[in-house]
Length: 328
Ligand code: ACO
Image (cartoon, rainbow, N blue to C red):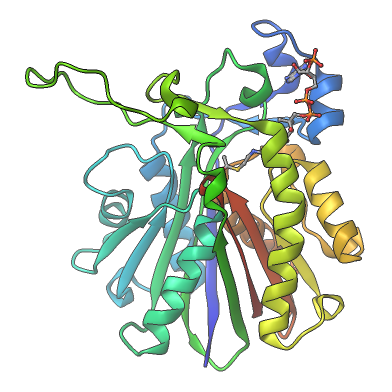
């Protein structure tokens, strides 16, 4: 038994921010950003909340899947930028679309979140514990980006996408992993309240002690090196489990962190760029929302055909990584 993506939806903030907009407050240029990352533009929230983007994407996914809110047995949201520490993004977004009693939970696997969530969903579907699951991936990266750090602030954007998944007899295989040696390479400390009982500073490891709570820091070059080997490894291992050669894949939908990372990874795999969906030029890196946003765009553009074998592959903070192979 496998799973089917029954419908997809997406929502992006209205505000488009091009590379030139950064030139007024950090030392950078459109030319540097374009050539080093492939990014031309990103969307940045001018007030819309993460759960509101997630709810709009979910509404569209339900409609596209011909599914009513009452039919949803479970909601899994993926995010590193929820609006509230509690309740979960899943609870806030699900309520907005008229889901009343289905179990709701958040899953944080950073940019690999959607691939991880799909795998959790598949386990529930396979054991008949659910018939239809709504996955919402929503991110407001502008909430944790340090806009004084030119090496990271130009990379990220905001947005959301959602899918409804159900059981089917189509192919599904996954391969998930972490490289925990890299756990401090992309890091954002939680904020904490004033506390009359704590006299000492928290005993953070040296690597992250200097960081300001609430802002993300990234060792860009280390992450780059990791990503260029992690993506091909995940695709290869997942294909191996599925009994496929990477060349048999019809489409690859990678996490969109840097165009150079995607190109290098595909070169390692020996796969032609025509098979790869790339939209980083328009949206930058929207963490866990990148992969389902691609699915939504491709479905709308009629680029996915029944029977196509597609591979979703991601990497992110943790350092998490993984891939899923499924049949459209
Ligand atoms: N504008 C102009 N110059 C810049 C900018 C900028 N925005 N950012 C960095 N530079 C400078 C650097 O300061 C450096 O200058 P120096 O040589 O005088 O010191 C120079 O450009 C080269 O810097 P590098 O870091 O070597 O540049 P590189 O080509 O490696 O690109 C980048 C940096 C884009 C961050 C790249 O390493 C990358 O994409 N890394 C992966 C990041 C990533 O994927 N993160 C997301 C992970 S997913 C998640 O979970 C969040």
